[in-house]
Image (cartoon, rainbow, N blue to C red; front, side):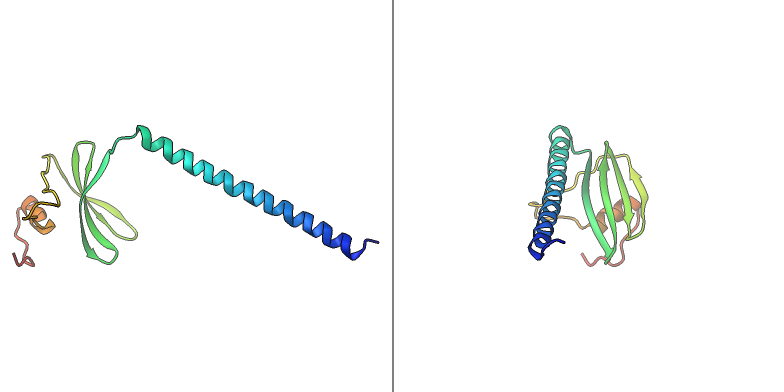
Length: 121
């Protein structure tokens, strides 16, 4: 029969091996994540740019995207993403340091050809 100290020694060895395997697994996942994202960023170009975002509700928004020389307006909800419109013309949005920054509602109304009633400016 084994003594009490032998059982605790075997338990300690088992626990140490488990900790070693978990540490190696975590290190492996960390290195995979680090090297896979680093390789993708170096040679990639910004193919998708977010031009503007307009929040409609807590989990609903309109997003204006520039994808491969095309401007797209998409609606985003918690369960769905849908394309609303596509624009052929290049859009010149003002920079953030411009004093007279038009609102997203002005841009959307000008593209749709309607007036936005909730606009106070």
